[in-house]
Image 1 (spheres, chains in turn green, purple, blue, red):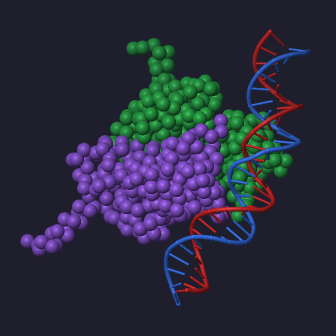
Image 2 (cartoon, chains in turn green, red, cyan, orange):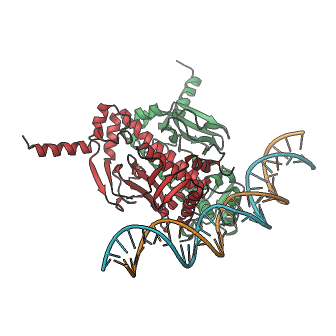
Image 3 (tube, chains in turn red, yellow, green, cyan):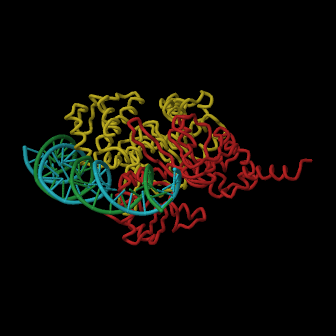
Length: 247
Length: 247
DNA sequence: TGCCGCGTTTGATCCACGTCAACCCCGGGC
DNA sequence: GCCCGGGGTTGACGTGGATCAAACGCGGCA
């Protein structure tokens, strides 16, 4: 028999990598799986990976093998084209999946970068496919996750195509707020993990414009902003600004 | 024994709805499937549907049941929000899939409208899921198709977020050109199925701006345009315009 | 403690695209 | 043939956000 300490550490490791015990199971891939199927998911997550702020989880051009679930921390994804232009395509927080874009060509098409010290679960994709051939619920859920990503992208296209600067920022902040809320954090007060420049890149604006919009919101009493700390003072006002401006 | 005429008609109908005999099988879902698996796909397509120009294939808010493969014709999808704004999120041509956005919530999130008389194959989604649990290649291919849609959307986000009007139109035309080419049509000469307004909506521009960009391209000898008929005279020039402008 | 550097704010000016409006073109109906 | 209507083009003008530039504040480091 092994020592207590070794047993304890082993148990601890197992617990740590098991979906069935993960406190994100209501946010992440396993959402809604019955306990017996959930336990089968435990074999899915092969490795955890820790990243420091600024580290790349993967880079555009690398071979695609796994998708990643954010276990803690905060990420951005961005694409860049030859001529030097780049754009942030998304920000990912706890429980969200990274790497879905790599499935199509088996090569990652964007960069994923940690905006703070983070931890992810790597899910080998072939493994996920074979397990989802066995577990109907998992298969269906995975399809929903991919579809939700498409719907989200359509929302961003809408934002970029039809909204003006302040509407975009309002939409962005309300979206963040709601995602923090879903994770049990305050929807009204949070720290932005990204720079004005990164927000601007995501919203199709220059950093100066983002900064001005923040100032304007503050003047109008919608927000209290101190650097990256944001407090929403008037959610309804933001929502109205987002939807109701111009015909 | 039935009459020759009846037999012939029956055979004809079967041929018409079978993926294994469809001349789109290299573009559509069955791409790359070996013949024996391809034959199993024939049971997948339950119904064909014909649409006239202007008809809705589905509307935002309707229950999601099937995805659709364009068999012939041309579609647009658009989303609209309360305040009246709307945006075209995509144009779909032969062999492309419609309805993937509905999987996430089991409700269609956009409208799909035929831009010319068209025909689609309806693929009941639960059916597709069960078959793709049996046919690995199909499963994998379907995942690739969804992923490609995500990558495409990222491209559009890039376009909307970082490109100026003429760059956007150039990118749009080159994309159309390449898709026509992939279907065996001329990449240099084609008819636009959509109005200037619809192009503008897709590209995040007003119709006047689209029109002016067309005129400019014509002045510069890149294009010959007569109403909706477009002939590309200088592909390299368009490509250069798309990528190389501003730092 | 003071200096340095980077992210941010703020101001002044510019310009690409939106807006508004007139006109044209082409096809369909009478 | 004529008229009518909708899509498209073109022009004049306005404006939101980009660009350029300066200054600020905070954190890190000597």
